[in-house]
Image 1 (spheres, rainbow, N blue to C red):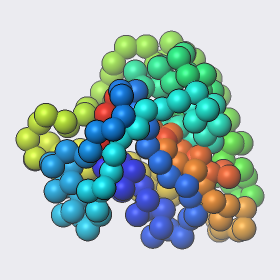
Image 2: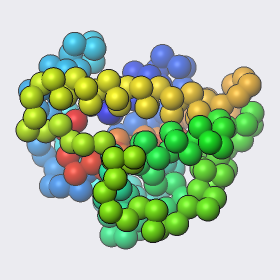
Image 3: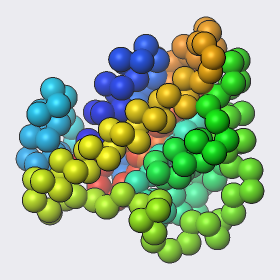
Length: 200
C-alpha cells in the first residue's frame, strides 16, 4: 500500500521519482485482497503487485530507504549493508524532518538526510517501539488496513512536503527519484520499503 500511495502523492506534487518496494521475506507473493480493496477505495490499483526480496545492490545504492519498523532498518543496515544515514523508518524520517526542517532551496536529498542523521545512534533502533513502528495489517480485518492506509498516507504526504523543500522548487528538485517502499532512491530520492511484507 505504501508504494501505491507514495507514487500518487509524488505525481500529484509534480516530483519525478523512481519508486519501488522490496521486503525481507521471500518474494513472489501478490497483494492481499484486503490491501487491494483498501487501495481501490482510494482509486489506486495495486492488483498487479508482486512482492520481491531486497538485495545488497538495492540496499547499497538506494538514495533513501524507508522501512515500516525498526527491525527493517536494523536488518537492512546489518545484513544488506545499507547506510544508516539514508535508512529510516517512515515515522522516524518524518519526525526528524519536522525537527530539522524541509530541504533548503538547492539542497540535495543526500545533504538533507545527513542533517536528519546528526546525533543518530544504532542504539536508537534497538527494540520495537510504536514511536517508530507501523504494524503490519496482514491477517487483520479490513478496518485495520483502512487505518494503516490512513496513517501511511498522512506520513507520506508530510514526507513529500519535506523532500520538496522550501521556499520554491528548482530543476534540482525535479531530478528523477528512485524509491523502494521501505527504500527510496532518486537520482536523488529513492524510497524503498523493506517491510517484512511488501504486499501492503
